[in-house]
Image (cartoon, rainbow, N blue to C red; front, side, top):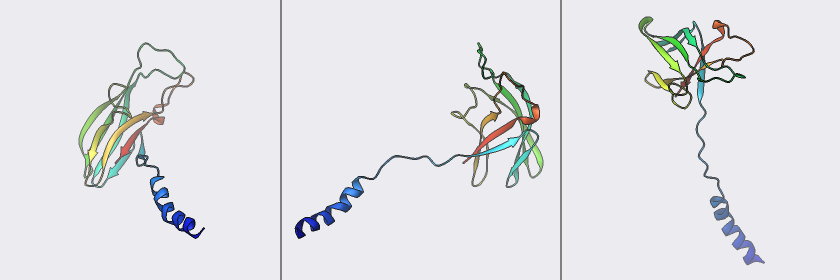
Length: 138
């Protein structure tokens, strides 16, 4: 009986070690929402969501021939001065959560364009002030 107990105590740690799950888990995504007209800052660099140019995405609840896209204007600032404005186009073939666009690199962070929300619905039009740009921060 004593020998069985010693064997169990000896082999139990090895069984527990090999039973560990080796599933890879991605770190959580940090997504920041930038409302239209607002600015977010990263040290001395800023990003401003200036405006929506066009939102032709196929609304939920509607069958469309073309999926559409949303076009926005984003401003980039350095020390409070505008450096440039860019037009960004979001669709399944351009910028989307599976194909993000690098917007800004700082010493410690990289900021990517992730998506534009809310998504259109056939039930209610989107007020231009409701739009926001989702930025992924890595």
